[in-house]
Length: 291
Image 1 (cartoon, rainbow, N blue to C red):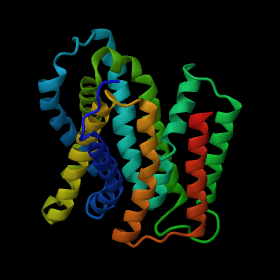
Image 2 (image 1 turned 180 degrees about the horizontal axis):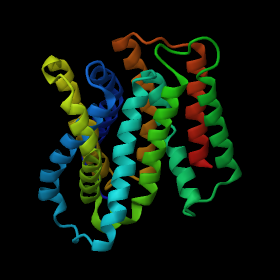
Image 3 (image 1 turned 180 degrees about the vertical axis):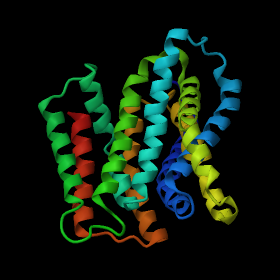
C-alpha cells in the first residue's frame, strides 16, 4: 500500500457520517416528495454532478467498447435505478433503524451474488454467518411494534434495493477494472437516470413543486451530492491506501450511527427486538466475512 495521507481517517469518518445521515435525510425528503419522483430527481442530479468529475479525472479511461454499452446500461438500471427506487419506496414504509440494519447486510448479499456467479465459494462458516444475520432480520419484527414506522413490506423493499446493489457490485467488477471507478459511476448514474426519465416526467407533470419547502429541496440536494458522489469519491480514494476488507469494517458503524440519529432527530423508538436483532445482523455479517 502507498503511504496513507494524514487526512484519510478524517475523510473516512466523514464518509460514514454522511452515509448514515442519508437515512435521516431520506425521511425528510419523503415528507414532501413521493418516492418515485425523489428517486428520479436524485439520480438526475447525481448524474449531472458526475459529468464534470469524469471530465476532470475519468477521461483517462479507455474508450467504451460498443459491446459493453448494453451490459453497462443494464448494470446502471439494476444497481442505481432499482436500488434507489426500492430504497426510497421501502424507507417510506419502514424506520431508519430497520433500513440501516438491512443495508448492513450488503456484505452478505454481495457474497451470495458472488457465489451465485461462481466468483466465491460458500463455506460452512459463511453459511452459518448468513443464517445468524437472517435470523436477526427476522427478529426485528418479533413482539409488538418493533420500531416506530417499521413494516415488513418496507423492510422487504429495502432488502430488494440492497440486493440490486449487491448484484451490481459483483457484475460491475470487470468493468470497473477496465474503465476505472469514476467512469463506471458516471455511466451507472447516467443510465439509471435515463431509465427513470419517463417516470420522472410523469411524476413531475402532476406534482405541485411550488408547495415544496426549502428544507425538502436542501435534503434532496444532499442525497444527490453527498452519499451519491462525495462518499464514493472518498471511498475509491481510500482504496488506494487501505485494503478493501479494512474499509468494509466501517460498514458496521453505519447502522449504529443511523439508528442513534433516528432516535435523536426523528424520535424513533428502540425496542428489545431491534436491539437483539440488530446485534445478530452485525454478528452474522462479521462471521460470514471472516469465515
